[in-house]
Length: 271
Ligand code: KIV
Image (cartoon, rainbow, N blue to C red; front, side, top):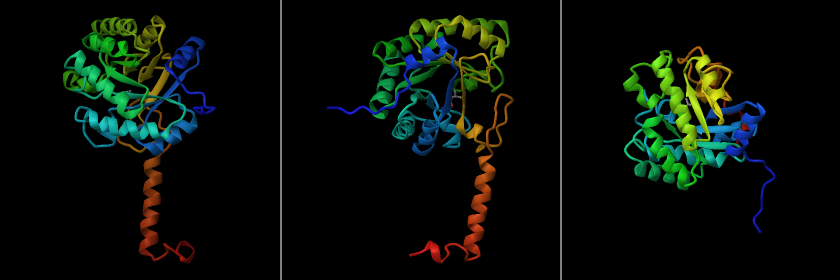
């Protein structure tokens, strides 16, 4: 007989119920086992294995270089650390833009090899055919509109998107298209709060904002930013909950000093 743990897992249906009941959704990025375990135990609803791993884990300037194999490695590590939350895995640049068959193959690899629960894709109308094909096989898809970092060389900057009417209209149309295609939620990144509110109210499915104001159905931040590991990135939308960079630096300096001064290890710390 299979044994079932008593833990109530978060599913895409749970998220829909949360939106319907007005309960906000919490989401954070994670890229490894240890942090995923801490975040899951803390009660996070969604962990996103973001392609921001390209920046914060690998040190690249953009999200473009990270590969499907590397995303799969990060996602496998995260999935091993969690018991309750929903895991969303970013489809990296180049793994889905070619055509819908390629997109489906990439999504299937992610689901088969990682044990993740869903995938996320950037873009609206341009990728809707691929999204439909992936969803038709039973893989849940989260959309991502507004500032879509995989298109950084098209935008030229990381500034707020959709301030102009034409872009705002396209975003609203794309949001409806993604909902019709069957996406279970949409990330809205760095767009005016009033636009995010309008989109959120026009959709049945939840929106998750990052730099999109307080009226989205949920919020997401990159863990390195909210924990203060990465201290150079200080956009207005970021709330930094701790200064881990400072704490780690102080601890490592103390460790170095203890070694140099012959204080570590002391007799109680040896066999
Ligand atoms: O890759 C990522 O971290 C993301 C979030 C910023 C939403 O896509």
